[in-house]
Amino acid sequence: MDLNINPFSLGNPMTLKDAAIVATVVAFVTWVLSFFANAQWIIITANPAAWCFEALKSYFVYWAGSFVTLAGLEQLVKQKE
Image 1 (spheres, rainbow, N blue to C red):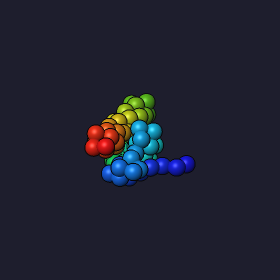
Image 2: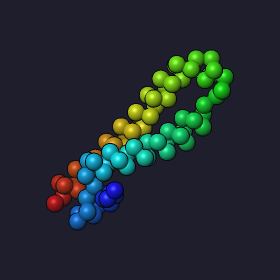
Image 3: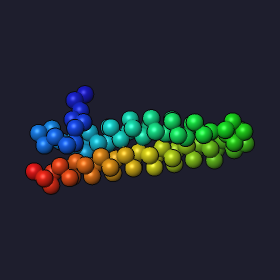
Image 4: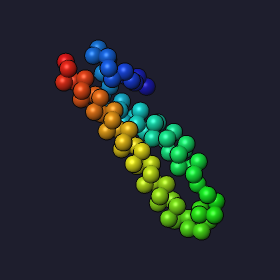
């Protein structure tokens, strides 16, 4: 896999595909560090379906935030070209 992960280099800008891949990795790490660090076993066992919904919702939010940020950097580089 050949990722162009330097969005500030005009010779090597990050594409939307690269932004999606990096956002997936960043969202996963952020999700594990923040969501699972605050998970409580009592809440998980009390309502597992609701907990799974919250887990998926929080992952999507982390991914979307990372992707929009990285895609915005990609567009900024394209405007400067």
